[in-house]
Amino acid sequence: MEIQKPKSTSVGLQEENLHHQSSQIHTLSFHSPLCLLSVSTLCNISTLLEFFFSYRKAKIFHCSFQALKKKKKKKKKKKKKKKKKVIKDMGILHDDVVLISQSDKEGEPSVITVNCPDKTGLGCDLCRILLFFGLSIVRGDVSTDGKWCYIVFWVVCKPTTRWELLKKRLVEACPCCSSASEIFYYRSELQPPKPPDVFLLKLCCYDRKGLLHDVTEVLCNLELNIKKVKVSTIPDGTVIDLFFVTDTRELLHTKIRQEETYKALEDIMQRIVINFNIEKVGPEIAACSQASPFLPSGITEDIFHLEVSNELPSVSLTSSNVSVVMDNSLSPAHTLVQIVCQDHKGLLYDIMRTLKDYRIQISYGRVYIRQGRKCEIDLFIMQADGKKIVDPSKQSTLSSHLKMELLQPLRVAVVSRGPDTELLVANPVELSSKGRPLVFYDITRALKMLNTCIFSAEVGRHMIGDREWEVYRVLLDEGASLSIPREKVEEGVWKLLMGWE
Image 1 (cartoon, one colour):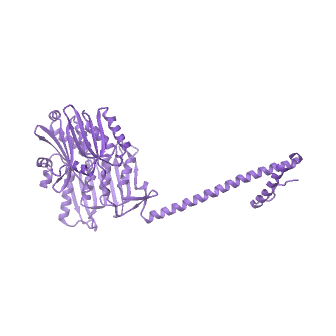
Image 2 (cartoon, rainbow, N blue to C red):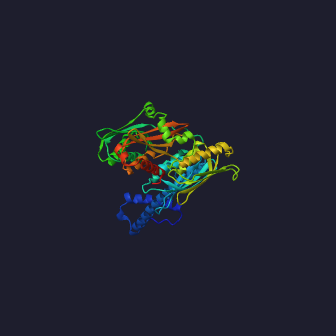
């Protein structure tokens, strides 16, 4: 019996011959004694076995390759469908909503680009976040058609800036609400968010200089928003701090988040903590935690005489050289607002906050800060109804309000309360009930730098005229208040709040 190699080179014939010859091999291997086979036959069998196993390997590879091609085709089809859906629904990839280009050289600005659907007040929300993260805007460009907007910020940052967290918060502020497969789509009608849960953080510890600022810094780094504070010192030197806070991450009800908060406080306070507790409070307790809606007349006269008299400030604690000019001749559909003023911390936020409260929409804007803190701003705006501001009274009201906010975005005063000295700071609250970030942090930091101790502190919201204000009342330690002139305390707090330290 002799086995011949297949002569045909075609795959089909090779497979047929291989099947026939492999059956012969099987017969030879198990039914015929190998000793009866000739040497040539054994060589042919060896060759055939090599061909057989090579063919099997090729067949397996071919099948795997075909399966891989099918998978790739399916993926391409899915990608095409996604691209079509993005164009159809004005969608945008999650990672493209906010792009951050960090500066390679120290002192040069980083660039933040926001590309998303538009909404009234979006610029205010973004500027508030940048202010919270301690970024200074040195240049900005805004462009929108009313449906989609493109915003670029050039910012100077700190070495400790948390870029990933910043990007996450900026994306959350954009009206890109519904997501599917990491693609976000525009939704015109947004459901109002439910009020965040309020937690009471109780801290009992031994007193030391700068304690309140250190605690406030920890809470800010943890993204715990301070809604109300009650701080008091008892005669034995023990401090009792009560913070009503909300959690930006909405995790403070979990044990892990509470332990993270405690560890962060313990690390900075160096074992002076006596007692610590966090508990969620109900709506009735949260309502009771709010301050009285009306301030005593003495406090109102001390820091709000400008609001009552509707006059521009003439005191020393103001910005300088503010110019607000409105022009309707350069655009058929928009009112041009030109602002020239001195730069300060949160300048663009103060402008955007004012426009948001008046429901003014920005179609195009340019912000540029020159050397010497001189800021030039051009804004093409229109009302919520899509029309320019033609009414002279509306122009005058908006212009006066912008001037007031730029001259004195915060109110600062140091006054006598009998034998005690009290520091008063107030800032306006947005109509959306959001306050200016990091005010209490800057107050406590300024007092720590001035080596001034805090005996007690309260934070609450009050109605002054037709506006809501966030008012900070800090009772200074008697020894410290006597050693440092009140004017120096007032000026030091004001400059730090304005970013002029």
